[in-house]
Each structure stands twice: as structure tokens, then as C-alpha cells.
Length: 480
Image (cartoon, rainbow, N blue to C red):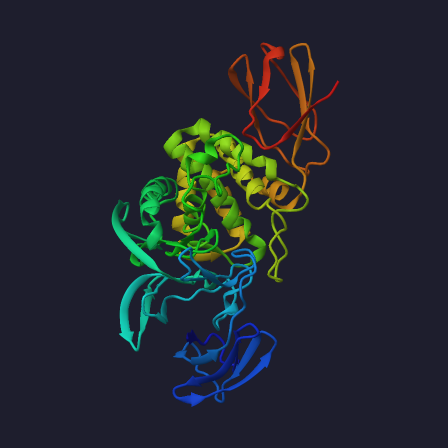
């Protein structure tokens, strides 16, 4: 493990490895360093004062039987399974739990490894697939050692190993940055099903490169790997267990029918290559940055391939899962994202609402592409993303973000009709200064209104044919 000295007054390093795994020894330049354990933390003490800005490396020797996943990927660890031919089928997943559940590392999201080498030895006849590109395979004593090289920065939980009776096939996608190597790794008995279902991968790449910009990891290729759990966004090694069917295990999450037009795991987990793996939160409190944008990527996939109406119906359909029991942003400095699904479905509807306010799909697309370019291979905070969006759109978004991200209640518009006069205001439970404009339709004609917390009014041409644009995520209440 390489490191750079940022403070020469510090002679101690923290490395994380979760019980029951254990570190046996740590060496630097062949000299064993003193280590001590405090729960899941190991302290490594250096005998001499380090040189500021110097770059060094340590070797960490460790062993043990890592935690077995209880309900991967949500309660993760190692999944030790058998396939339907009774052959070993093994995989790792550790988002939230932390990658230190199975290998020693600096287990925090604010800093990423600049590159990585992964070597896994398995019984000959089985194959390991990991992140990056396969660099070498060695055979010895009835075993095979697979070595993969990752050339791009990678977050710890994105590192994975997948072991099974795999076969693979490849194709090349002509993307924005040139030829992108794609490989698919599936159980041998599922090859034909995979070849049919995975035709959606180039469709996904086409849609997401359009909306988000170039795939962020051309040097490391793109892989889709079958695993014994539902799937996850492991960087350049996206895992798949959706049983070769559209929807979420065959179910349309939106209830509109549009969710059955695509394989949820292919689209959602690969969408994380842009929002999670390219743009990565520094603190788990900001997990909405991963999940909201990626949940909205499902709608953008539909928008690209099936049109705007399909996309709008889908994202509105997912509102059924919004709970509004707390803020979307979680608790800082304690590795705690917000509870529940609102960071997915409320967040995606907030982004959809912002898109309506921008009212320019070309500009909205440039915003998404701009985010992935400005924060390319970066770790970020919510405030950095808010500032970028506000500067890019030139909209007064501070109260908008505070209302939707840091409050639990949905903004409510109160209105009254008196003849052809529409009176309207945002309710008292909205934050002071909340002034998001709204689009209405009167006799199929589009009109904008500009509500505030004080009453305002406009004259309508035909008040009995009033409709509020449903793509804005608000509540409307008509008063007598």
C-alpha cells in the first residue's frame, strides 16, 4: 500500500480490518513495524520522523475468515454459494459495511486508491473476475492465479472478487472516447440467456454517454459479471443477479409498465459508474448524490430510447415509495446515510423537478455532463454539487435545496379559484424564501406562475380547465 506524507509531525497510521480478520505484520523496506489493535482499527507506528511530501509503501500481511454476507448486497461480506450445478459461486459486496470486512485499507470514502492490483488464486476450473483488466493468469499445483490491474482511482467498496464456473464473451462499443472493450462473465449454463439479455448494455452506454458524458473508465474496460446476489455498482466490474429478466426481478417499480422495458440491474448499477464511481461522496451522509442521480438515470434511459412521456410517467410512478419521514441528507462524520428510500425516489423526483424549472433539456443535459467533467474521478460534498448546479443554471437554488434535501415535508401549494382569478401561495410549512415557479395548463395552453409564501393572483382565460404540471414534485391543496 503506497502513501504520501502530508504531516511530518505524525508518526502513526490507521489501517482498518474488521474482526475476525487480523493483520499479522506490517513491513516497510523490509523492516517490521510496531502494530496495535483497537477493535476494527490497527495502529501502525513508524520509528522515525517521516519526510514531508515523501512517498512510501508498506506491506501488510493478513489472514482470516471474513464475515459471510447475510443478505447481500445490503448486509454484505462474502457470499459463499453454489450454482445450480452445485459448483462454487463466490462474490464480495460491502457497501456501507466497508471494504475492511475482507481486506486491510484506509476505509473511508474521502480518499481513493489511485490504482490497484488484485490477485486471486482459485482451484483450477474456476475463474475469478475482478475490477480492471485481466493482466495475467498463472497455473500451478491444480490452481489458477488471476491478476487484474485497475488504472483509475477507485473507491474501496467498489473493489470486488467474483469466483465461479464462468465463461465469457466480448464486444467493442464505439463510444465518445473511442473503442470501449466490454466483456460479459456468466455461468456456463446461462450463456445463451445472457447473450440475449445483455444486448441492453450497449443501449445503456449509448443513453448514458449522451446524458452524462463519456464512460469514465475506458482504460479499465466495462464488465458485467453474474453473481449469486442481486447486483452492485463495482467499478468497471458491475455485478448482475437479476435472473435475465426486465424490471426489478421481473417487477416494474413504477407501476406504469415502463419499468418492464429495461433490465433494472443493468441500467441502475451501470448508471453508478457516473454517479458513485466517477463522482463519489466524501461522507455517507451525502449518499443521495449516488442514489438520486442514478435512480433518475433509469428515467433518462427511457427518455433516450422510449421518449419523454415514458420517462416522466416512470419517475412519477416511483413516488409511491417516498416516505418523507426525514431529510434526504444523512448525519455527517458518523458514516450514516439517511434512512429509507427517499435518497432514491424522492431524490430522483427532486432532480426531475429541477429539470422542469430549468425548462431546457439541452441545458439540463449539459448540466449532467458538466458535473461528470468538473468532478471527474473526484470525491465531493453536497455543497460542492449544489454550488456547481446553482452557478451553471443561474437559478436561486439555495432554499430549493434546503427545502427538498434538508426538510422532510413536500412543498404544498395552496390555491383558490374566484371566477377566472387564481389565487395561490406556498403554505406556511415551506421554508421562508421558497419561490420555485410552477407550470400550469389552462385549456391546454402553458402558463407559468410564480408562487411565494404570500398570496398572489393571476387571471386565467378558462379557470374550469386548470391543471398543475404533475412533473413538479409538490402537493396542491384547493381552498374554499
